[in-house]
Image (cartoon, rainbow, N blue to C red):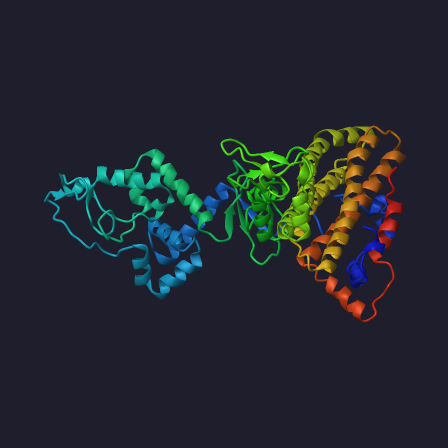
Length: 545
């Protein structure tokens, strides 16, 4: 979008918003100014690595170690056996401080809550046979088992009871005594004594997973076949996290990373893409109901004479929906309907036409944003493959041809990583744009301006990384390679800054546009926005070879 097309009510805000950008000549870095990763050391506003400070990735071994540490601490502080400590931690979401605080505040209340009884509620004579209240056979007490409550059941019934509970799911971690209304908990010690090895493994697996699934700060990585969990650091801002398996996702909603768009917008957009609502809208815009059976009919030829499918077979006029028997040369023939034209002039079809035009407008708007969302999704997927090829093939060729170290050629992978991240951001800005209210034109223009700048420089960077890399891959002249190197580094840095502006603006809900409106009321500045002058200057620095 050219700057001349923009309304004055937000032009000042664009200038203010971009005042933080450095002078364009500062992008002309020499070799001594390039840090190890290929970027200037003072530019850390926006990067694909931004999410690295807000989370910790936990492997299954590390989760087990965290559990053992918590269990040991509770055992030591409360002087309880291991199985009792596990019961308490499961109840309190593996938070040791919550366990100890409540325990010392009211031990009896906590014991009653989790089913840790101090003494049995029933007693039996050791010499007398006892009837198992599940199978109703008689057994000696030594052949029976009970938990803290003292209710005795035969080992076979206990095994079946526990095995069934384990096979039913993680609810086995809070299993109670089979006696009716008995609150006594069944701990891991009883489970390990009575069930088979396979059931023991399942129980241990449920126990391991409980650390994640009942812990509000830890979630499993959503990638297929990944057993890692991610612990989120509350209050760190962005929910974007990255697992060791290279899966990047939003910790809050577990969808792919979607900064700067909120989780609610993402959920609504994904639902819209998969829902039947668009089909219904298309039907409304491109079909009419048969006057007889009301089935939707799509016109696929030029003639207005329509025949509904069997068994209806109703013949009617496409324009006025009247019976075809009343039509002929007198009503305009096969390709017109003067009855419709007359009725339309009298306003009989105004509401229907408005409804149809509105449906078409909705489809056109959705198609516009969805096509661009999907195009950037595909482009990002291709960029991921190109990054892999660069890491495995191109970089080795360049290192061999130009005798450079791994650090010296890292700027190539950094550029591709930036492309991948920017494609992701740009993709989700189209979902943002779709839901931007129509009654806020200044915000929409400001958004499209920032999005256009960011997209312009991303296309330049992507083209340089894709075509330029191939062009200079076999270049033996140092000047050619150094020219490509400098150009790619500059483009990477410029693109990074423009996307930092875009992300910051959208996360602030385009609040900066209000500054522009205030300046307009006070006789705001009329000079060209800084970002456009910057574009002109930078384009000379990074002009394609």
